[in-house]
Image 1 (cartoon, rainbow, N blue to C red):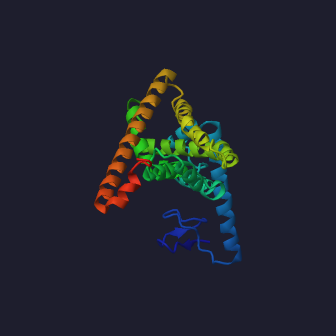
Image 2: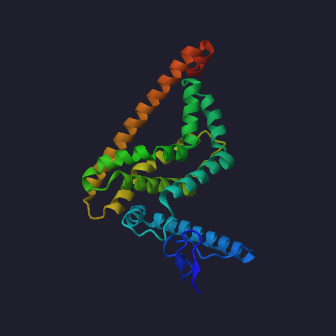
Image 3: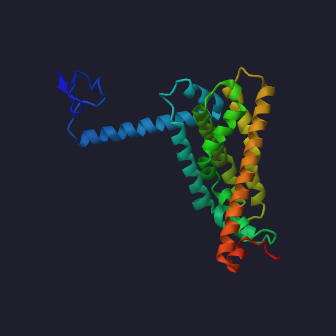
Length: 265
C-alpha cells in the first residue's frame, strides 16, 4: 500500500522514499530500537573490521579502491583515523602512562630546558593525535611530491588518512606492548624512536600498493622527497614555537625565562 513520505510528501511504495531517501514511517517501539541498535553495531563493526583487515594486507591498494569508488564496505578513512588515534591516546595515557614516564626520564636530562622536555613529552605521548592535526599539511607534501601522477590534493588527504591509520595500527599492535614492558626502564626512549624508523617503510609500502604500475625507483625518490619536506616543515614549526615561547617568556619576566633556559646554565 502506498504511503506519503512525511519529509517531502512524495508517494512511496517501498521501504524508503525514492525522492529523499527517508525510511517509511514506523512507530518507535521496542522492535524499532532493537533493529536500529543491531543495524548500527553490525554495520559499524563490519566496516571497521573490514577496513582494518584490508589495511593489514595492503594499505595502498585499500586507499586506491576507496578513491576509485569502491566504498560501500569501507569505514570512512578520516573517521578511521579519529577512532584509531583515540584508541592510541587512551593506551599511551591511561594504560602505559607514557606522558608521566617521559617527564620523569627527561627531567634527569640537564642539557634541555623544561620547555623542550615538555614539548618532547607531548609530541611523543600523543604522536597520533599530533599527526592527525597535521594531515592537511602531510597531504600537501605528498601531493607536491607525487604531483605528476595526477591525484588531486583532496585524494591525498584520504591517502594520508590511510597512512596515519596504518602507522597508528602498527604502533598499537607492535610498539605499545614494548613500551608497556619497558615503562620502568630508561630504554623506553629507544623504543619510542622505533615508531619514527617505521615511517619511511610505511610510506614506501603504501605508495607501492597505491601505484603498482609505477617504477619502484620513482616511488622511492618521491617518498624521500616527501620525508625531506616533512622534516623541513617540522623543523620550521619547532623554531616558530620556540620563538613564540621565548617572546612570551621575555614579556613575563625572569621566572618565565627559566622555563626555556637549559638547566645547569
